[in-house]
Image (cartoon, rainbow, N blue to C red; front, top):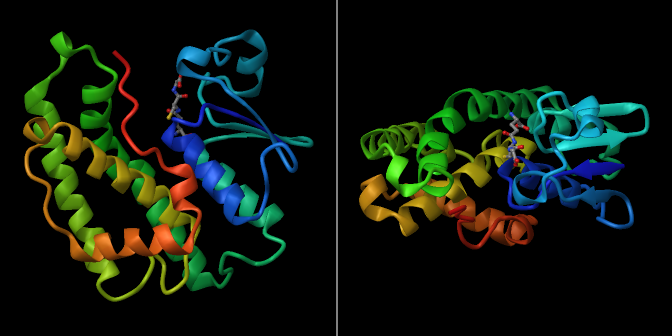
Length: 219
Ligand SMILES: N[C@@H](CCC(=O)N[C@@H](CS)C(=O)NCC(=O)O)C(=O)O
C-alpha cells in the first residue's frame, strides 16, 4: 500500500491513526510519501491521475486508488481489519457512519473557517468576525456530541470506531485553536463528556502518536 500525504494534514492523520489501530506499520505494511503544502507533489500530472482534486490523503492499494479520508478509513476497515479491531454489527457500524458524515458535512465546514482563517490566511486578510462566529457555532455543534457521550463511551456505542477518529482530530484542533488564539475564537465551553472521551482516546488508542502537539501555522 502507498499513502500520499503530509503528517500535518488532519485528513492524513485520520488514515494514519486508522492504519495504526489496524496494526499496520509505515515502512513495513505501507509506504508513505510526503505530499501537500511545502512538500508539493500534489499538483503534478502523475498525482492528478491518482486524485484529480490534487489533495491528500490518497491511497493506492493494488488495483484500488482512493481519495476522501473517511472513505479510505472505511475501505481499510473492510479490507484490512483482520483482528476485528472495529465492531462490525449494524448498530455500531452505522452509528459510526452517521458521525463520519456529520464530521465531513456539518462540523468540519464550520470549524474549518477559524482553522484555515487563523493558521493559513495571512494576518492582514483574516476575517475576524467570521472566525469568531464560526468558532462559537462549532461550540454549539460539539454540544451535540457531548450529549451523546454522556450515555456511552464512544460516538457509536461502548466500543471505539472510525467515527471517533474523524471527530477526535477535529475536537483536538478546536482545543488547540482556542489555546493559541483565545481572543479570536472567543470562549470555549467546558464539555465534560468530550474531555473524558479525549482522555480515554489518549490512553486506550493510538491518538497520541498521531495528533499534533501544537498547531502548524503557515505564515
Ligand atoms: N474531503 C477531503 C479533503 C482533503 C483535503 O482538503 N486535504 C487537504 C489537507 S487536510 C489538502 O490536500 N490540501 C492541499 C495541500 O496540503 O497542499 C478528505 O477528507 O480527504
